[in-house]
Length: 156
Image (cartoon, rainbow, N blue to C red; front, top):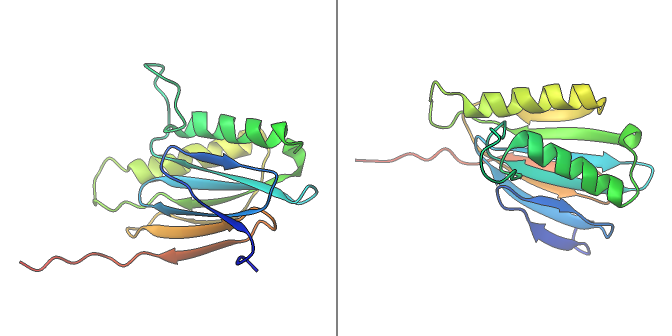
């Protein structure tokens, strides 16, 4: 039942980790969201990043995947979670603009490498393609509901 849980809307560059159970919604295009869940403590956290790597210039913002992952794990550990108890679910990384840059694809590759290095298993994913997604993450049980957004068509 998600009706009784507090709700939170996660914006791009955001990270959400709380001990109290929440339902967290976010919308993804080329961005990626990673849901971490600790089944022992029954707590979860989520990030939403836009670009794969911080280049060392300016602020080390969670807009960048490597920073967003560091901060998400750090916040999970601060509420008592251990990395060895975490599992990951990964969503997003669409190539909505049919661009050759492949920002979405690079976002996905970055987090798969990051999680492999951190020894945090990915137990579910829905990534790539050309259509955005909306996800709803229940931090109390680790469940993620996902739906594709409607593809926009423009008549001239």
